[in-house]
Amino acid sequence: MLVSAEEMLTKAKQGKYAVGQFNINNLEWTKSILLTAQELNSPVILGVSEGAGKYMCGYKTVVGMVNGMLEELNITVPVALHLDHGSYEGAKACIEAGFSSIMFDGSHYPIEENVEKTRELVGICKEKGISIEAEVGSIGGEEDGVIGAGECADPEECKMIADLGVTMLAAGIGNIHGAYPENWAGLSFETLDAVQQKTGEMPLVLHGGTGIPDDMIKKAISLGVSKINVNTECQWAFQKATRKYIEDGKDLEGKGFDPRKLLAPGAEAIKATVKEKMELFGSVGKA
Image 1 (cartoon, one colour):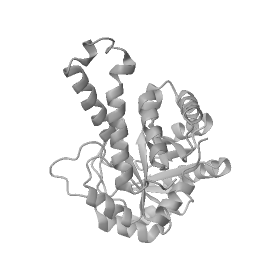
Image 2 (cartoon, rainbow, N blue to C red):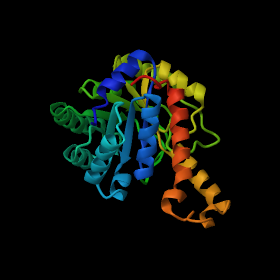
Image 3 (cartoon, one colour):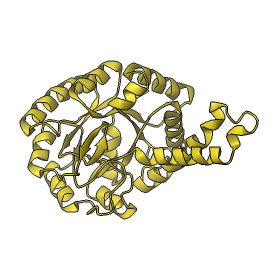
């Protein structure tokens, strides 16, 4: 059954490793990620953006599919189903639908409003045993049509939000979603360190995990990052494997056009990417 992300992230913070949040887009994505987590005995967080939730026919459909898979695939590792970059309304809808974790992204509101809305959602989540992630300082790049430049969060504001009792905090440290531009300045470890000083035991979240060099990822984990989000990299792996299958004419051989065959190489590529990330993050064998 689905669990809140609280316990897995508390353990990760203490053990100096990170749990991966891998965004899901359909059945293949979900199945590949769950099977890999089980095989590597790693806890995992399935992320669902509001756009992907809509694409998969709504949050109840997603909850039904994930719960069904946990049972049918005999998944025994801890799995949290998490709303990624949720609006206030989206967060409430996911709580209602049966998600075990939500993110309320109030980073674009004035800090007072971010605090007020986060406080209310923390109350609801505590009552229901759901974990909640909040964000301070917007993450750059494009996320569901919203483009940010990769700001650095104000450590004082981070403390204000952390003190509301959120489970985990996403603080902008110059990271962005999607591909990193050539002139990217790298992560601001100075900001991360200052945020960690102010928030203490709170697990910190690194968004935009695709394309950050491995040594930076490891350093971020050593400075208190306990959850790292990966999405674009799995999409690239899927696209590359699918393109190769079609370019090699495999879809024209026998029943190669059958979607189960057509999507299989992409699904395998997602598994390989997830495995690579779990090894890098240090979550293998930590379930």
